[in-house]
Image: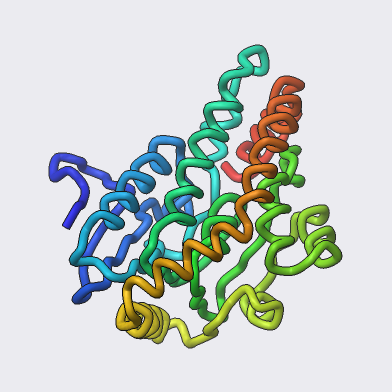
Length: 262
C-alpha cells in the first residue's frame, strides 16, 4: 500500500488497511489537522495512488485528535504577498487538484468525522460519498470571519442545502453541530464517539461489496451532474480570491485571528 516515506519524522498522512478498505488519517492534531498546500498535494497523490490500487475498494478519511480538518493552515495564507497575483491562483489550483481527486475517485469514500470540519476541510468532507460523525463534531464555513470570500464553499454547500440555508451559513460563518448537520442531511450516520470508526469501516465495507463497475459508473454520473457548476465555482474563486488577496484584507484578518489564538 502507498504510504508515507519512512524518513518523514512528522507525517501529515497516516495510512492503514482494513481488508480492502484503506484508512487515511490526517495527522496534525495540534492544529486540528489544518493543511498547507504541500499537505493537500500529498493527499492528492495518495488518493490517486489508491485509485490505481486494485486491492483497495473503498477509502475512509479521518483525523487524528480532536479535529477532522480545520481547513487551510492560516499561517501560510496570512503571508501571501498582495503584490503577487500568482500566489492566490496557485493556491486555488492546489485546492482544485485535491477536490478533483476526491470527486474523481471511482471507489466509495467515507468521511469519519471525529471533530471540527471547517473551511476547505468541510468542503472536502462534503465531497465524500458518506459522512459519519459523533455528537461533538462541528462543521461550517467560517471564511468570512477572517475576511476571506466564500466561493467554492458556497457552491459545495448549496449543492446540499439550497440557496437559503447556504446564505445564512456562509454569511454568518457559524459552525453547525452534528445534530443540525444530520438533520440537514450533511451527516448520514450520527453515532457515539466510540462507535465512529467501527461504523465508518462497516459502511465502507458494505459499499465496497457492491459491484465495482456499477459503483464506478454511478459515481462518474454523479460527478458529471455537478461538473459545470463545480468548474464555474473555481473560475469565480480565482477572480474573487485574487482581488481580495491583492487588497490585503484576508491577510489582515488571518493575522488578527492568529494573534488572538496564540
